[in-house]
Length: 554
Image (cartoon, rainbow, N blue to C red; front, side):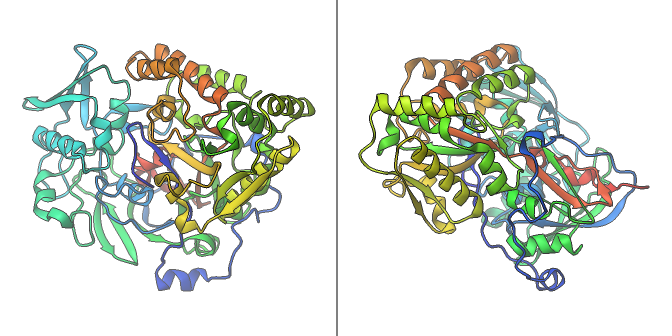
């Protein structure tokens, strides 16, 4: 993933060819398995059952072989915040707060948290915790770690923009003061901004920290026991762990993408994976010996318009949203494993006030129909007539991956249905991320076929993308009331009040078509049918999922 913004909004990395060990590839074979919907009929996206958890395991497991879609660049999440690194380290490195499978959070290494006023957070550091080198975790380590995260050169620095001071105020106490109330800071502490490092170990490793041959400098149910670059990463149960002992004693991670990953799971060379791509999950549907579990996620498929051409007019953006066949995209592009959606954030963001957010989602579906009706198309044509037909074709930016290709073609078809012209610009997958980071790369497109997720279970972790001064507001949307309500929500600590503000902000964002929602992308766990226990939700990026992995039968 690319660098996380202040509220954790992150484009999802396109699938890139990864490496696997010779042994894994020899066992799995390279038969060129199709990562499209090869598991029979596509799933029914409307009826896709999402569950945050899987059944509890009954028996212990000596070793699990797990697949990643690429090798981590580093295991220092302050400098390289990749999803592959998180899948490994979430079992190794604990945080001050912990994201739960149901996407709520609770204090963790910070055993208690208090707020004497709305601009102060007092953390009581848990006693009896040791790092994997046997040394005790102290308040000094916590403070040092927080300051390291806050360093401007680190990935999580933006999370600390509202922090006024951080000080040790007791033997096991840290006090954080804010410039203004901050509703999302504790949620950041359940993410990478809350990892507590062993100060001495990180300092001694210097620039080599996070590379093969270095220790993990963490507390947690597992410790890093080996990293053979280009081959595998191994973690083992830490015998001195302060909490519940993990069921699985050792996990060996290898990496593969596309057909190699699919075949490794089909042949039993690997026990499981969290499938980043719905196409990977689709290819494994109905495979004997494998179970699939789908859970809530914040991820979504979206169209991100620019101010370059025809989509700079909000009426044209609203018209396009009315005309898109989201159900067709879900079936043809993703095997039914994504769900037509009316907001740019998946339901995993509903970490509080879920009924209110669910009701708001339903109300917005009229502006983003799953399958456009004749009335929807008529309304879209009226909007085009009112705005005036753009002189030039609307250019759709994509790569050649199956899902994005289907979305791009669906967008072009939607434009044609309402009397507009669409043109597709395809770039190599390796070049695709430049659209997100480089304005020059998107200077000749009108809309990007994108996908996105946020690290926090709060919709307000996304909607600052619509602020007038946001670098992700490519279409130049400006609304003083929107800006005011976003900032008000971000400083509202009461969940119910913040939810009301978030729902208001969400409607303004969708009505203006700042981004156009297409589908939510559930989290997918693919695992041997002999195993169970890990969460199925997006929490697997921040929760020690391997500790619960074990045998279905004792």
